[in-house]
Image 1 (cartoon, helix red, strand yellow):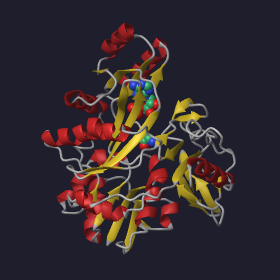
Image 2 (cartoon, helix red, strand yellow):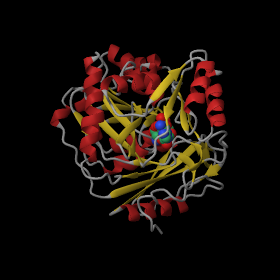
Image 3 (cartoon, protein in one colour):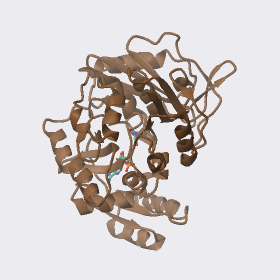
Image 4 (cartoon, protein in one colour):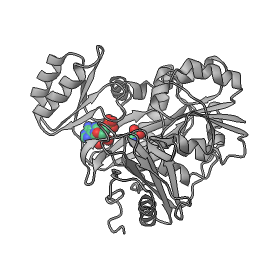
Length: 417
Ligand code: AMP
Ligand code: GLY
């Protein structure tokens, strides 16, 4: 089978790595891919035009496409492929609105009774500012549209909240801002695959969104992840019953059949789990930590989703734990330094995987080419061992001035190293 993976980040490198292990694959392509993916797949240049990629895939006889990032989903890549009768693992443009518009997602959660922070949506600056006066801080201000995980301000002062509102609403013409109640508790990511009827939750994981240790510094796309996150007993069932099922069933009742991955970002509050956000794809870096533990063939899973027979698939998991540490370029997230040299060991340390993201190949080896550069994944019998291996993997990389967190997983495992 000819298979295409869309994207160029650490998540997509992990997807390629997993897909490449499937006996069903005969040829693997990546668009646009990265140097790590190029070791597993043939990389096809791609500028982001979804119609053009669908045309290429049609011509090339691609039999299944898996989409990594949100941007092409929100642009309608699934619709463009489906219109040509091509199989694609990822939701349609309408379904991807659960991520593409936070205002849409909040409205949906309200209609369906899915637990989430109380909120209001504004497009007018003055209305938003006067609302802020009535609610005060701490308060959370979100850009309704896609912002690569960086459109959220958890404001500790009214001044900061007002600034965030002004920044968002003075930007794009059609900008909307969601202002929501501040929640506290541990955060967990629950990913699930669905064909629009059957839902199969994947192992829960935990991301680390802030740049620096101790959850300080600016928001990023994610600086590391652990998997599985040890959820209290019964919580996964509660999340399935109160969040995932109402979402998939509710969308279907509104005429939207959701097929692909659902990402539920949850806060485990004293009042129970509440949804912070939905995404329409695997998390990055959660995917890099989770996929190495999946024993089921990812291609078989994706095909079952596309062919409406997910009920036939039972997921199998490796009993180990996994930890991912992201190495980013200095200057990330605002202004990552491009063109810095880095090199990976010829032989990775035991039970360590390297997934590349913002890299490119220069005349003498790898160079940085984006913010998040590498995902270093360690696998082990338990989370402590997995973390030790991940950090051994980090130490084996030559990458001067790399930014990475030293405390991934520390909230769950206190005595690492
Ligand atoms: P989001 O992109 O909506 O998941 O927000 C990014 C991050 O902002 C989350 O992972 C949380 O750390 C934080 N956050 C979002 N919403 C809230 C909230 N209502 N209360 C507290 N923190 C939040
Ligand atoms: N790691 C957060 C995200 O993928 O949205």
